Image 1 (cartoon, rainbow, N blue to C red):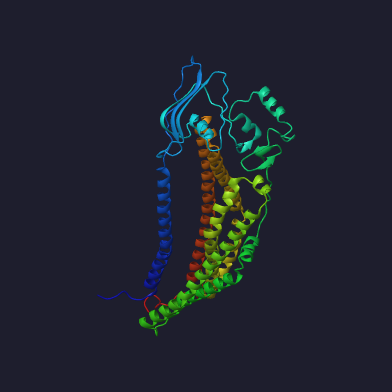
Image 2: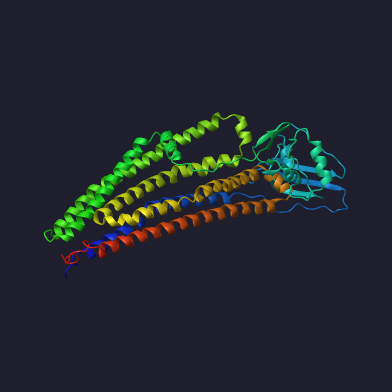
Length: 479
């Protein structure tokens, strides 16, 4: 059996096949990392879902003709497998029009008794019976995100007389302007006379081109300008050597004096020399990302720990969680990779243009307008708006989770579980819709950029074939 001839068609077909395998092979380590993260997340979710749950058994309803409104008998404990119950042999009856005051020392079980009536503790034995509905006032105020009117009405139809009476009774503590439409929420601006009760005003935003300032700030805060420059220089050397190897192939295939051993040997040497430069480029980019992450996280921690209480009173918890979680994750993982890929792609494009121009300078007639068109297409600043709106849709989800966890007793007491669950699904759907449109906008841009890329390749091919002096020799495919 004879091996295939080392002509241009065979060599470039092999190189293109290997190049198409490069991108999937590059994602293999990332795939293993994501697999490990998925397994850890599944274990955490499994442990959470297997936690003990409260019994969903409804409280026994007393007969409407009965004079007893609340009846509780039995043993109750905060821990299901506790040997000693928190409340032991409790027996309590509350009759119609009767007011009960429970007194005792700290830790005597007053709150546990109240939670037992609300079915917030484990019932070891006995029964809990309630005749009528429950109104529960917690020790700490619980304010939801939304307007003051929404917090007062709590999804009920507004009775204007009662609502105005409520507003008038608290007029001295509430703002005089737009009292019904001011927004309230967990950990927002406190109202005088209402500790931990918060209001907030809407924020304004500005529209404009941020330019290179975020990148310059990223390098300035991390003090990684030297690492960034070294990464660029290393990749420039790698790209130059890779294109030099391809240029050697194009020259060697035209010459009948170069045998197969020399052709492959020189190409292998140049490619081998380029590998350390690629390693150094990725190393410097990774060190830059680690240095920047450390600098920003340290600054964020210092700012949070040194912030005055007014900051926590005026900033929603969901917004703080979004900065610490999603924004820091973008800064740690996405930004260094994006900077490295963008710099590498820019260098590859410039080197490719230079190589094509050295062979067929007339291709610049098409490349220059293509660059202008690509810049014009990217002037639609939709991605910045999507990122901004993504923060606006992610923070309410985290804020909703925080509010729900803090007011879970009140939510169960007023039987609002379904309402809160539906509201959470609406917030998730809103965030998912924005994620879909963000990806659709990115695909819109990619489709047009790839169309311009195909146009440039087609034009360069036609110019090489059709223009005088650009024809390939007869021995190009069979040296």
